[in-house]
Length: 340
Image (cartoon, helix red, strand yellow):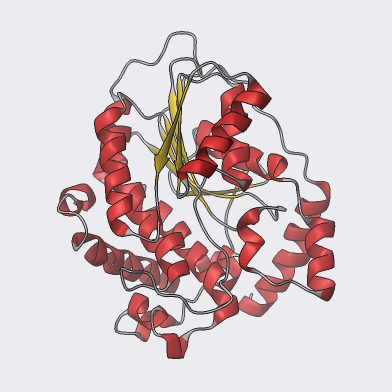
């Protein structure tokens, strides 16, 4: 099946039925003694999944947020809705700054005794205009892909330590998880034709080659690539690594979009409340899936066959190698963490 036909088939026979009819299960688990981290958690899906987690009574929740004042409000909201009696930390994390990502990971690894689940959720949709970060990367590319991968890899040491710790008594018995927020649009819109580019990331960082509507989906495809690559690392042994499509949700991810007419109508007609979409993330971070799994509607699903083709894996490895090279310029720990 060609890519255009794959997009149409996925939209008609998977996306629409899921959005209209999917009944997502709730998770009833005891998370006593466990510690979870959620980025982008002061609003939208991140806040919603933090609320779901708080109801399951872990020992500690860490909220990674760009705005500490908004994070403090999110903490109050979590307590108000769940009467959570454990510890909630609000830590600064700005994914547009590699130094902030590195500092956040360092604080996590040095402060927490264990990490049972990390939901890497912070992300942005298509910006209305081209915007470069202080690190020299187009903002969506950096936040959704390069910084997401950097943080994920830098958290592996603590996740790996947790695999060797005794599980809390009477709590849910599951290995530590690294869960990345993806998108159902990921498999259908990602570029597999860029294998001839000398450097894929630099091409995407060239304003003259920017295709604005594709940017979000391209970066979310890279999150699928990241999950598959990270899951094969020795440093991730025993850690469940997956990528989760939360579904189309009425969340703040659309704050940079300017939807009108039919698109706006469909968005509100088909979109789920974030509390429902966040159940997918809860499933992803608590369910022992095979590493590299793609999850949607609380199910493990194979993305379209072309994303598993020889060409797709060639692009995946190329993107991975280029990201590793970028990360090397940020952290001296990267080589050890990505060694195979």
